[in-house]
Image (cartoon, rainbow, N blue to C red):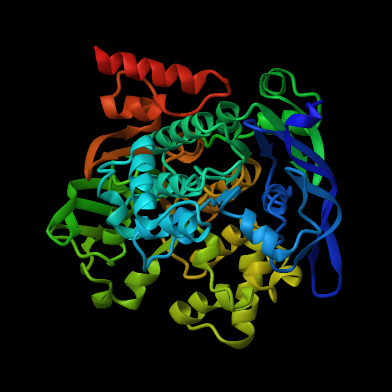
Length: 543
């Protein structure tokens, strides 16, 4: 039990409800929580556990369609349920800050980073504009951002995802809050960038003795960050303990099941000796403006094979996908489909060429039109590419929903907002299948999902590949995903293929130094892992 004098945040019997079409449904069911000054509490659990909902409740806030229906929320002696909106607005940003999962979706694209940093401290009267800009530069330097004196004068789209996530953490620290809620802050980052962000977050929290709720579904990550861990399931607490005890000996069966996920491993297919590739990237150089992002990139993907393309942020993975789909014509080289060169610009491709290559996107939240029902989202490709109408279209939509293991009668007339993250990603898969392609690009399709849901998506993709003879290009930064689903691996760095080959060879030494860096950056379920890794790298750099 924490010392009452040190408790910064307390929740007792917290109940939160969500509105359906007909009634209010309880989504957080009597959770208790205490957090002391300077402490980090990890909240973990699968999708729908209530982690983010509880994190927002710490600010006295409930999403649209939700309401805090019972219990107590006390922040430093202030009752957050009865406090006025003016009081809560004065706390938010000033004493309680929030770091969202997707920095790219959270920053205003029309304003420079330093303007968005300065807004909070200036409005709260903490600093003048000049002081805020100076402070931003100092925190950018502490967060190990490149060019800290000038990076703030860039727009969000002009920095990488990892840099943007660190800039958001710096912005959260602008008013030196007492509490920060980190909501999956590294989920969408590659492993090398994740290490930088985790180290920066941990250092900044320790330097300013800031308390934090660290929300994540990644157990290895929470092991590096949290003093204590609370496990949640469907809005209820499963168990809570200090981090080392929780990792060493969880007491509840559900917690043990979380520890044991990612058991799926697709048997590696033998190397293809002969036969025409479905897709060939041949000596492609491409970029934006005068800058080459891809430099002489080549690889093949054969039928019924999965090629994982891995590398850190900025390595050229997604740019390669843009070239393949015709969104970015290459400066040099070509893309072949079944041995025939594709027009470099998608607008010059035939409808059948467009149909044969589909994409499943990373963020299902932003990839699905929120105003369209599931029947329209899944049906449009079948209508556009295959000409289906009326009864035939309706039957095809229902067949596709059954293929992705979603009962048509329950989901066909829902909106995306009525689905979980995993369900939205399944709809993205159904939409890609609706065109009856030969080749699908899976762009980080499990990175935003908890481990149990991600496991289900990987198994689904594996099954569909076998049923429909699909070829996959799997863009990912998650090496556990690579081990689970890939036949071959292409490692990219700075727009160059540094290594490629069968999965079995890629995970066996000797490795290219960059591949070794990626492998060594995968977090382990050891609370001392991050500290040891950073110390080892610092020693190597000194030598």
